[in-house]
Length: 503
Image (cartoon, rainbow, N blue to C red; front, top):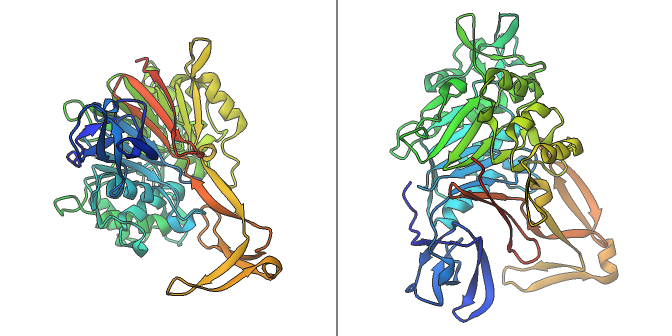
C-alpha cells in the first residue's frame, strides 16, 4: 500500500504531543519513525499534527520531526500464542500469526484488534491491506486471531470495513479427518530410516479441495478447516481470490520480498522439507503436537544490516534438524532480534540459542495459560546466549522481553453500583452496607478454551480492573540502529532501548 498520507516522521527515540502550541497537557507519546499528518506550517517551535489516532491532534516540537519511514516489527500481546505484524519502510504489511480467537481470550482481544487499530486509527484508513498473511503452523493459539482478522464483520468488533490479503502462506502441516472420523496429521511415508508426513496442504486448488470434501481421507478437520475456509474466501485488492502457497527452506525468500523486489528481505529458513516416496514431506518429530510445533515456518527479516528472526513454535528436535540442514551455514540464524521459540518453553536446544545469539529476545507468553511460560531456565539461557554489549560499565545487550511481563493492570475496589437510565440519570445506587449483599455474575474463558466458565463473587471487597496496558513490544530500525520499546503504565510514555546492529 502507498504512504497513508503521512507528511513527516519522528526523528528522535520518543517525542511528546502537547494539547497547546505553548505546551500544556501531554496528549500522547510518539516513537521514532511514527508518521504524522501536518496540520500547520512546519517552522521553528511547535507544529500542529494528527498522529496515532484519527482524532488525536496536538502540537509536536519541529526539531523532533525530519525522520523517515522505518522497518517496524510489532510483537503483539495476545496472551498465550503469537501475533507479529511487520511493516516495511514502503508500507507493505506482513501478518504472522494472531493468537487464539477473540472469544477464547481473557481480554477479548487478539492481534486482529491491534491490526485494526493500526490501519483504522493510526493510518486513518477504512480498509486493512496485507501484502502477506502467514500461519506459522496449525495450532489454535497461532491461527485463531488470523481467522478473526479475515472476518471483519464479526460482531462488529473491528472498525475497518474490509481486509485484503495479497497472498496467504502456511507450513503445509494440517489437521485432517481420516476414514474413521479421527483427527490426524495425515498420511506418512518412511525414507532413509525416518518417517515423514506427506499429506500436505499445498496451493489454492489443494485448499479448495480440502475444505469442500475432496474424498473422506482428504477433508480438513475442525477449527483448522473453518480457518482455511476463510482463507479460501479471502480476496486481493483487485477482488481476485487470494493465492495460497506452502513455505519451506526450499522457498528461500518470501515471494515479493526477495532481492530486487524489496528493500526489506524475508528469508524462509524452515520448515525443513525432504523427499519421501517421491513426494515432499515434513519430518515426524514425535507426538503430533511436537510435529506441528517443530514444523513451524521460520523467517528472517533483513533490512540494511539489521536481522530479525521469527521462530514460531520450534522445539529442540526441529532446532537440531535445522542445525544439521544448515551445517556450515549456521550464521544464517544469527540475528539482532529473535522471537523466542514456543513462548519460552524448555523444549529448546541450547546450541540453537547459541547459533541465534540475539541482542534482543522477545518472549510471547500469556497470563493464566497453564504452561508456566516463560520457564526460568529459558529466560536465563536467552540472556546467557545473547550478544553481550557493554558501554560505560552498563549492559546494553542482551535484552529479554516478555509480552506477559510488559502487560500491566490497575485495580480498584468497588464502592458503589449504579443503574443508569436511558436519559443518563442514576435510577438506583447501591453502596455502604447494602453493597455487602450485592453479587456479580461473570464468565471466564481459559486461554484456548472453547466455552466460558460461569461464576459469582460478592461485590463488596473485590477488586475490579480499572486500567490495562497491553504488553506490546515494538522493534524499529533504519537498517543500522535498532530501537525496542514498551509502554510505561504510569504515564503512557515509552521505555526505550537502542543499540547498533552488528551485521
